Length: 301
Image (cartoon, rainbow, N blue to C red; front, side, top):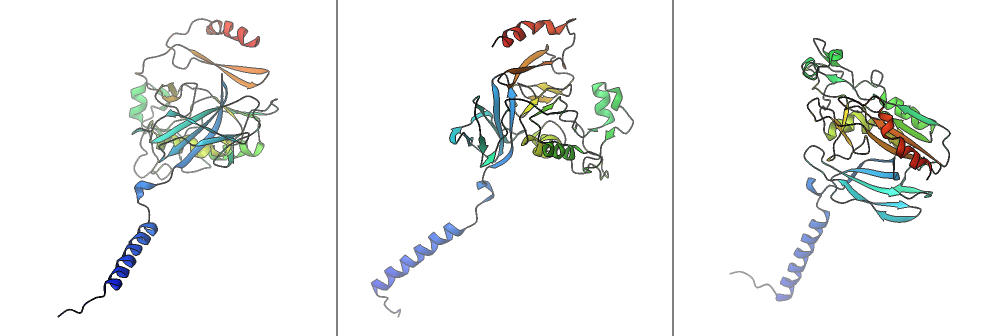
């Protein structure tokens, strides 16, 4: 025959069991699906509207706030995540005259009133291109029998990270990238240790490996002007980097566009113009004539 348990003791046992369940829920490790947002890149680009702060975040569903002159302001979505680019891209125009801006307590570079030093470079991608891809694109320069595969894993043979750190150490007032960000078009051949495990194609892992990861020190050093090269097209769907409309890998079959110009206001009294003709089939004899009226209007502002 079972012994009788006093009601009071039974109530205490229930309370202790409930407390144990609560503690277990609090201290249980988070599942992989509940990861915190990760800031992959933060930088400032210059355009016709002035300085624009951009943030690239993984595992994020909403944009963070940016702090401008001590006041928090919301960033807006520039591009939502998708299967190819599973990152959220956010942006916020920084008003002229702002003296400070930061994201996640990390300062962002702002335009200087006067430019004393400028760093300019381009063609920074690491080339991974098979002979088949070169032949398909009609690229005779890379149509070698074995293709062209650079040692992307060797910082001496692909020194973009070193160049970016040197630029950051020099502390320029402005950085200009003249285009050709992404060169990893084909899979690294089996057994090639120089590029083993490298991503390739037009997706976020490749953009991160070919540009955002090695360029990180320079992206934080100064505002950037980013220009489209002949390796990019401007696709409205993406918003990572490149031109006023962000670039994608240029594909030969893509419908060619006419040249496009964009203004970059680099200081209160100076502007620059970028004329892109990289995907034009037949340029007019003097394409600069198309932008002269805009140049005159801008010079009177």
